[in-house]
Length: 138
Image (cartoon, helix red, strand yellow):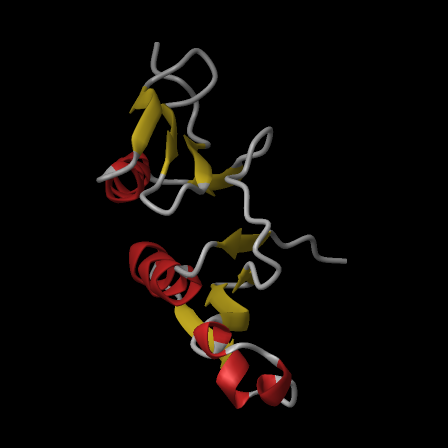
């Protein structure tokens, strides 16, 4: 069984998925826009470029997403997308990329449980936890 995050965006899904693929070294596997779907004729003109379903593969993991086609988008609250790295330098670089033009909730640094941990919201509003699973320094 897999559990994968499914993110929604207010019209910025394609840009966000390209960004995540770049940051994590993944690949956009799917990006279906409304205009290319069987329901395109039923949707208003302003929705035609929105993403109905997108998917980024990062190693064996997936991030899936779409634009909010119902017009009820709310920024994520009460949840974070958690990432785990074996290399503290890579974790720090990923955190910096995600946090740039976003909001740092907890700066990346050593903690009592890990060599590096930080929390941020990226420029698309997605909340992230970036963790390095190495033991905390003495």
